[in-house]
Length: 190
Ligand code: ATP
Image 1 (spheres, rainbow, N blue to C red):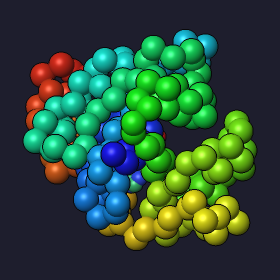
Image 2 (cartoon, rainbow, N blue to C red; image 1 turned 135 degrees about the vertical axis):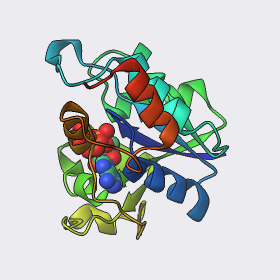
Image 3 (tube, protein in one colour; image 1 turned 135 degrees about the horizontal axis):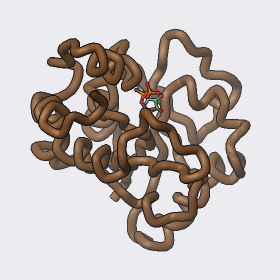
């Protein structure tokens, strides 16, 4: 089974993330996608970052009716900050039968050469990249393990959603209804 890992703080998860995750799970040779929620870095506490389990819960709720994409808390138990190569190594050991791949935007592949052990990542894993029109992919995009896709894109960010919430504006359609209801009920980000 081939699993694509889509990492993010998902603070909160929004339809821009979900469209990418579902596209990769249904329109590529990946069998499943795990949305890996990044934990708070205790050394870099950010007031605007909701708690790890609140963000995980919202991703879970968003994916309740999706049998190909799921939320993962795998990094919660790993040393922080977690580097992708360490998470990949851990996953390989824990799930020896699965093949893991990375999902990232064109913005990330352009700076992959700055990541810890990026050569090892490229050599041992496949990377599924979705184009972002405002970013050049850079040289690494031509690597045989890099696969570039044109997925549908939504021009939104979690920052924008948090801003709307702070200002008492509607976030309807920017996140799934269930996510909006949970955020409203728990007063997250307000
Ligand atoms: P913030 O505004 O708080 O920085 P974000 O919306 O960019 O958050 P992240 O949790 O940082 O969300 O995103 C996880 C991954 O999804 C990142 O690699 C990011 O580049 C990508 N991403 C974020 N928003 C979109 C979007 N609208 N379309 C496609 N990819 C996105």
